[in-house]
Length: 184
Image (cartoon, rainbow, N blue to C red; front, side, top):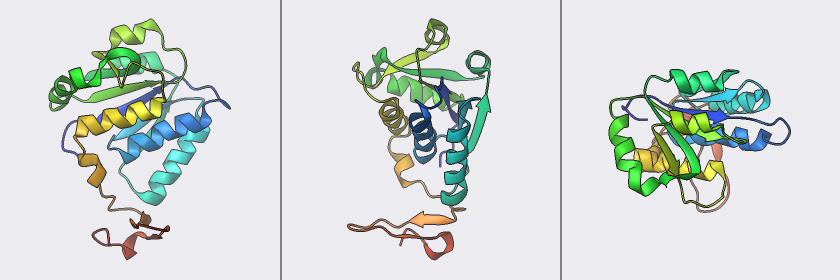
């Protein structure tokens, strides 16, 4: 979708049973809105399977990984780190700086699931808020990626998709990937 360096999304924390749907949606949102991969905690196996299945059916490239080393992933990241938090700087105040840095450096976007330790705030190059109000981390990730890519991700195409959704004013139409050309 983009020619810039990699964008990876790290889901920091996952409570099985409680966070399954939200963690899955973090992965699906990362994929749909232009990230190259999502890194999930090792205990988020159901979310990994769902996101991998959607990627297989609706196209990639997109990678789903798991790790038991969330802190090490942040610490060892060879690029810029953005931590999405309601306590951070307003996105509209830092988005240009983040976008400029991303032109040359890979970007890790940290999306918390439970209480994020202070060390993550310190390790981040930016702690970014999509409003300074409580709301969904999926909404925050969506707005952040849209601002990062300046809307280009909305026109992303998935050339290897087995299934494609055809846009319609009413109803639902899903076809085999080779049945749809140029979005028609």
